[in-house]
Length: 92
Image (tube, rainbow, N blue to C red; front, side, top):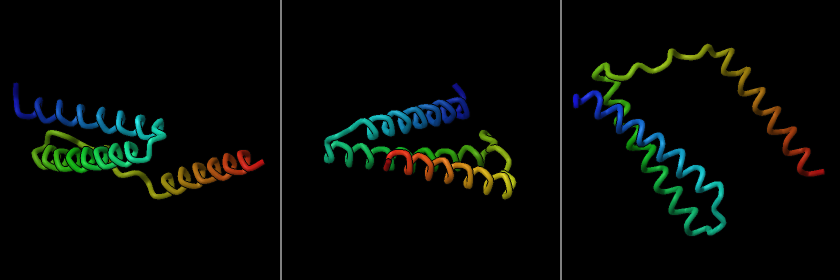
């Protein structure tokens, strides 16, 4: 197995772990366990980013091109409006 393949496997595994931690956190009612899961997720995110940086430097991972600032702002506004509407509906 080539180094590039191993790095891509590690990145995929890290992303899957982060998703699993996030799901567990949102479903956890025990505050101590929730805090532990958050710590583990944060550590997995840091590891994933370090591996991503290494893979990008070696040319093994090509990130998506930068988004247009207007598109980013439009999405932020849309999400913010959705959150505001959701919050108002739950307060009724």
